[in-house]
Image (cartoon, helix red, strand yellow):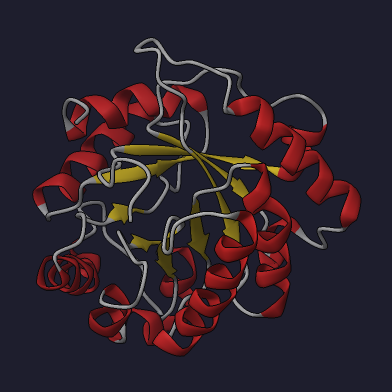
Length: 246
């Protein structure tokens, strides 16, 4: 059972510090907001941080966009026990979609599925209310994309290329042709599994909005359905490139 539109043109990533300090947006044109709880990026996320995110999730459910629809809020978690602990705390606060960083196998997603099934039962939610968006960030993740795309609860893949560049020793040229094969694997896996078109990496140079438009258009032409955004001023450009909302 899906609880929100699957197609995502843009999502805006927020840090735990932004949420705790009241610096997270109260309204946005992004199709979703993603609070980053991944330990690799956010660092340790303890009880005070999780409590702050839970409170913000509840408040965000009351925030309306220009179309009078709440902006979906996800969290990005680390795979494994730490991420499982986070979702146990946040499902009751209204979390309905989980982005799984560093996904490399269906084993990780099967373990999360079991945890989410228990949490849904405890919360009185229908089975598979909570959906999952794996994030592919490594060579292993890209090569396993076909299986990952078909795993339980998966409604869309995201590709983050920053780590891949170092892992593969790539130095992309301005047209990023060196990334074409990698991107095609993710697009093909998504299409074969019948899930939404994947979401692309945030821009390397987010301040260069002209280049953001150019590289976003290249992602669209390659079969991507949207792109991650690091700052609010990127959202309008990404939305424009990837077309009108559902």
